Length: 212
Length: 212
DNA sequence: TTAAAAATCACCCGAAAAGGTAATTGACGA
DNA sequence: TCGTCAATTACCTTTTCGGGTGATTTTTAA
Image (tube, rainbow over all chains, first blue to last red; front, side, top):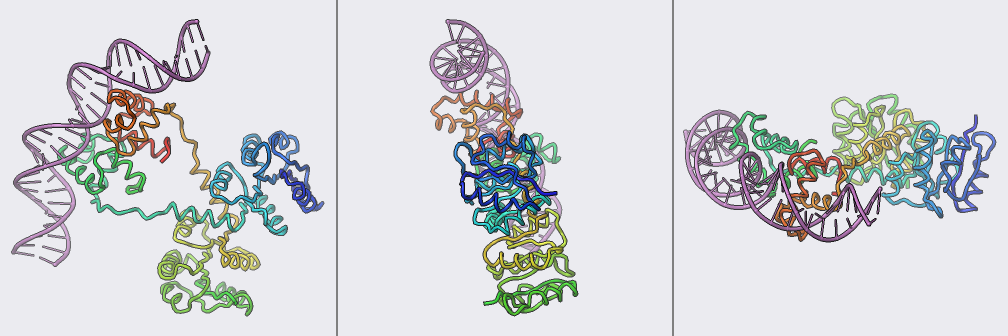
C-alpha cells in the first residue's frame, strides 16, 4: 500500500518537482498539492493523507500554523516540515507543535524519499544541520551548576525554603531550633550573595543549585 | 585524505567487522581498535584520530566515561556513540557530554558509513529511534504554561520580586506607593494559591509563569 | 450607559524575616 | 594535640511582610 501525501508549498516549480518525484505510482501517491495552507486542516480532513509535506514560508498563513491546525484535527497525520529556515526558534516551535520531521530544502531527492519512509516507520528524520542545532541546544542547557560551597545542611534548608516553608516550619521539619534556621539562612544568603529569601530561591532555581 | 578512526568495542566479532568494513583504504583508515576504553584518552592522544567509534557497555569503564575523558583532552575529536542502549538517560548524558552522533547497533553498514561522513561534515547523525526520543523530550518540556489570570501589572511586579527586589524597591521601580505594591502582591499570592513571596517565586519559576 | 475589573492609595496590626553578637559542641585534618 | 569548620542555640533589634478593611479613579467589557 502506497503512502498517500499532501503537499503544501508555494513555490510552483518546487511543488511540481515534488509531485513528479513522489508520484512514483509505487511507494508514494500524491493526492493533492497546494500553494498555501489557509485551509490545511480541511484539506487534510478531506483527503485523509498518511503524510504531509509542509513548507514554512508561505503567503497568508505560515506553515507552522498549518502544522498546528492539522495536528489539532488529525494528530496521527505525519507532517514533515520542508523549509529553508534553520533558525533555532522555528525548529523548536515545530518540534513542540508535533512535527514528525524537519528537512531543509537542499535535501537531495534520495534522502528526501528515505526521510519520508523513515517518518512513516515512526522515526523523526531531520537534516544534519538541524540535528546539530538540537545537540547544541542540549549542551547549552547542561551548564555546570556553579558551586557556592553550601554544606549539606544548608542545601537541605534551601530546599525547604523553595518549597515555601517559613522559618518555623523548617525548624520543625529539621528538628532544630528557630535560631539555628536563621543562622543557616544567613550563611546561605551570604554564600549566594543575595540579601533575602526570595532572591535566594530565584537564584537557586535559575542556576539549578539544588534538585527541583 | 582519508578519515582516521579509533574503535572502542568489546565484542570481538563486531569490532573486527567494523575494522573490515571501515578499513576501505579510501575514505576511512582504522588506526586501532580496542576492547575497552580504560586508556581511551591516552590512545586518542597517541593516535590523533579524526573520529572515534565508542561502544557504551564495556567491561571496566563505560563508554560514556571514555567519551568524557576524550572530550576533556582533545575536544575536536569527533565521537560517535555506538550502542544497543536507547534509554533516554543515556542518550541525553552522551549528547550533553559532547557526543557527535548516537547510532544503535542494528544500523546497516551503508547507513553507518553515511553517518560517519555526516559527522565529519559537522552533522550529528543518529538512529531514527534516537531522533524520535529527542522529539518526544521537547514535547514533554513544552507543557502549556498554566494561566493564573495575572494582570500585566501583577506579572510585572512578580517579575521584580523574582529579581530579589523588596517591597520598597518595587514601589520605587514602578512609581507607585508601598501600599499598592502590598495590595498587588496580596492578589498575586491569592491567585497563585501561595502564602508568601518565596513560594510565589518558586512557583513562578517552576511553572514558567513569567519570562526568565 | 452601566457594571465589572484593574490599579491606585491609606491606616492598622501582628507575625516573620533579617542581621548582629556570642557561645558550645563535635568532627576532621594538619 | 590543636585549630578550624560545621552545626547548634540563645538573646536582642529593626525592618519587612502578610493580611484586614475601606475607598477612589480609570479602564474595560457588556
